[in-house]
Image 1 (cartoon, rainbow, N blue to C red):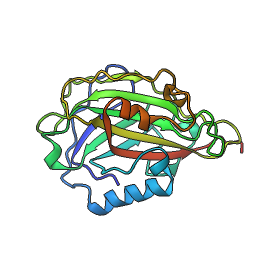
Image 2 (image 1 turned 90 degrees about the horizontal axis):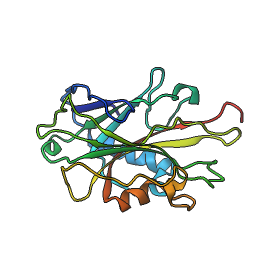
Image 3 (image 1 turned 180 degrees about the horizontal axis):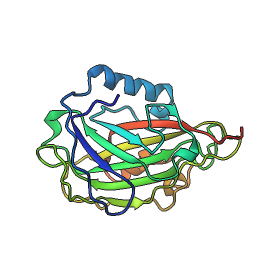
Image 4 (image 1 turned 45 degrees about the vertical axis):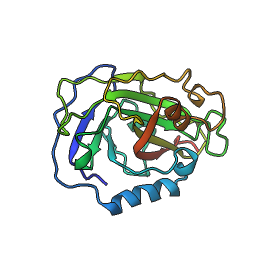
Length: 222
């Protein structure tokens, strides 16, 4: 799934320089797009967390000793610090039109998948991530972290949790800096209702989903 043309690299903090892009002239294939959507459906992320969408970006996520690979399992001790994330522009024709980007991380299985009384739990929101008009990344760019990274920490005996990374962009296509409303609380993304989260927050902020990735994690005591 790691097929890239333009890569944005960053780690979690409120203002950080963005690494220079790495260029690889291999666009994401139709089969890979279809496989991603199928995996999201198999994991019931579509439709319980996200509506079906067309993937315009690949989200590549890695820590020092782990990386996300569309539904793999990672031990919580390996994801305690904010990861390195690459938002990969897979469609060359979008390079001149892609507006501001936002990255979110949500847990739809809090407290557990069978008892989602805290769901969804917001773990991270970073916004104002920009691709330039030629599809490259300005190395001086900073992004805004409106919800700091909260490490996944599934409770004991709650089984596997799905942790879903979501890339979003404004529905109106604006290239102006975004002034997004941060959720009032991490739990339920501030909406106070079970199973409500990133989908409702994106709708309220005028954002559309253009990419996703996910992994599983569980407490060692089950």
